[in-house]
Length: 118
Image 1 (cartoon, one colour):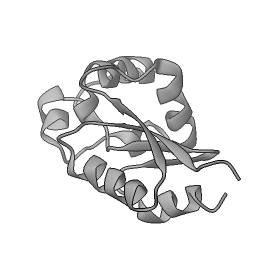
Image 2: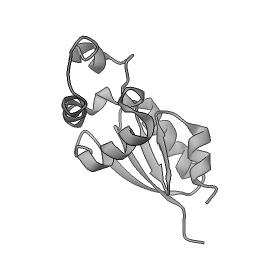
Image 3: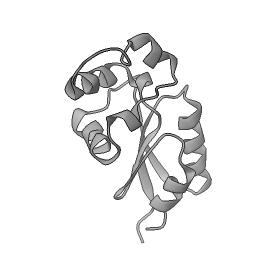
C-alpha cells in the first residue's frame, strides 16, 4: 500500500489548519501543504471544493475577513466570490484538505480519518 498522503490548503496562523497538520503528522501521513498566504489556491482546485460543498459552505461567515469583505451584503456572482476568495484566503473555512477522493472543509477529524481508510 502506498504511503498515505494528503493535500492541504491553509494558512499557518489558522488554528484549524494547525489542528489538521497535527492530526496527519500523528498518523505519519505525508502532507503537501499549500500556504495560501504565499500561493493562492488555483481556481480549478477551489472549484472542486465548491462543486462538492457549495460556495456558502466554504465561506467562514463568522470570520473578520468575511465581515470586512461585505460579502453578506453584496449582490454578486459566484465567479466574483471565487475571485475574491483566491485574493483573500481568510474568507475560507480552513483548511481545505484532499485525500484521494475525499474532500473536507474546516476542522473535520471524521473526514480526515475517512481519507486514511484507503
